[in-house]
Amino acid sequence: MMDYMLGCSPACLFRPLPLLIAMAAGIAPYHCQSAARPSQTIASERSLLAGSFASEKLWLWQRRLNLQEWNISVVVSRASELKPKTLGNIHWDRDKKTAVIRILDPADYRLPFAPMLRDIEFTVVHELIHLEIAPVLADLQRTDANRVEEEHAVNHLADALLMLDRGQ
Amino acid sequence: MRRSATLFALLTVSAVLAFAESWQGRLIDATCYEQNKSAATCDPTGSTTVFALFVSNKAYKLDEAGNGKAVEALKSRADRSSDPATPASSQVMATITGTKDGSDVLKVETVEIK
Image 1: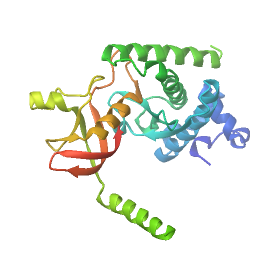
Image 2: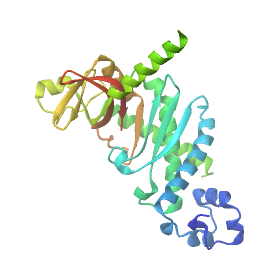
Image 3: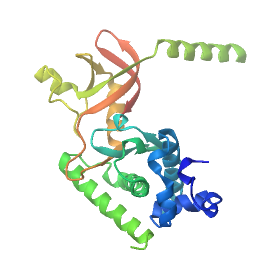
Image 4: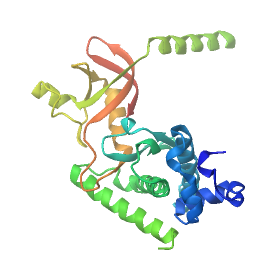
């Protein structure tokens, strides 16, 4: 069992999934969060955890956004594998209906554990919205200016959806 | 007859795979590069239709199929910027597989953009 669970109450030890979900939502009991000591978990475990968390969120949001006909996967990537100053990306193949979402590896995040998971979920939703609106923008001549506009719009939509989901 | 056809197909695929190479470099606007003789300001834009891959100070032009694949690859991606007010870098790193056609043209099989 992962180190982050060590030191929790027996209830936590026997219920890893709810704990993970609770941590992601930032509602885990204080004693569990403080005992989690995420900084002590090894990098590969954190990557695996981030990957499975993102896949679970992908499954959920893909259905909510009615993108079930797409075969989408999540890849945890180091910052060096992404464009500079980005937190993730999506590549898709319109004909094959396949897509790959890259999320930033926890090793390159500068956030505590729970906010990092929330940010990873934001990346998943953000990239799915890009995919959702891709047909609308397909024939648009892309410029830096309209990319910035698109990025703002996608962020606002992702923010709104996640705030609704989190009851904020 | 059927067995020979299968064997021929297998040999063809093997031959292609045996000769296919892979290059990693910066995808640039080939027309801009030809005009400026420098890759510095030649990142591809939404209107680029002719591309080159800049590897170790040498520009390899993509064949027609490769240009089409590069256009499609550029259109079929999006980043999540850490600062939404500034667009992600326009520099595009790519991995291209294919074969060399002459000294400076790549006959492209796949274009993968970072």
